[in-house]
Length: 530
Image (tube, rainbow, N blue to C red; front, top):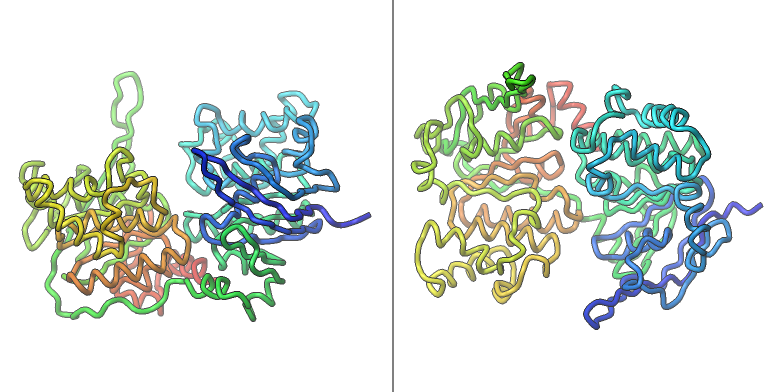
């Protein structure tokens, strides 16, 4: 019996929209043996996810079409299969872990109900037996407090927990092939390491094949047997993982491998004056229960943090999701209520109301994690960048235009882009627009909240280079919030490590990376650098 499980030959995928045809996949050949792990690697837009979705006929037909090609699973041509055959293959033969679990999971149903549905659709079993199987699956993927998690809704779980639930759903009927579409994107380094270890352990236990879709070569090195590199809808290089890493042939492969954050932070004087400091800063959110909604406890998101940032330097704030990093940034901007001192330019601002804070908003700017979510889809780029200018430097539209053009040029975008809208740009370009919006006001301090977490490595490299360039050019001070220690090492002069609302380690970035003292910091570095 042949060990060939998946056989894709000359696959082409076209999308037709508004009379225009986009050739998303252009003649892809790919095979996968039983029990093997193959990584399909490339940047956003290269055609990886389209290829994966075509394997299960999940593309938006009839807008999507296949001018040529075949996809065979155990000899069955997926593109020619009828609805009943597809239903049997989906979930039974092939399971899929989607890229964004929060979007893929139904927010109205509990975890148990969603996994149970997969079981009942494909197996003749009672609800009681299905619930028992749900519990086994959640234990298999390493979910803690299983009984509690079964009754939880997706929004009540962390990113890592949601990803584990997605894996449990995909494994419910013990498929022969697991397609994992960016299963670790935007996860903390420790959670990413746990998910990768979990996939390897489950593969060994269940003897299944894995098609891994990713843009991260660090993930590929840890888990894949073979690699296929996609660029503009084509596979430009394929080889065993060991050979490809030892001697990449195609220029695009080499560019992806060289895109890891590197280099040193922008030089800054050690004697620089203090621009921002906190003393015993706290942000506690009340937990209210009962008919009268009495406060019974608090979520201590930020619990007594003291920090100092030198003018012109970059302070990295590191920690896992839920450690309090973003809440700290919001507190410094006076966007959430806090207790404790906040000093900006030596002046205590922690008691300022909205009116007194307004003149300082120009000097204190922020770039949010998700550029698409933070940019209004109904506003042109000129309106987005000019909005802050209209508030803090009132003048007519023509008077604001030179400042808008200057901000776009500073971030490496064509000034003509100001007449377009956010959906017309890539993720990296949208992040540049978000930075331009902040730069237009000529701030002194820029808070960057995970600005590169969801970007391809090559785009991350471009954005980091841009941040260094504008820091050097404008003398900006950064508070850089991230879970990616490679990025922090490249950009930041000093670092604080947060866990459960507290700082567990602080110091110069060089000292912390060279000799971390706290076990949690050591765990983060071990996961990030492996």
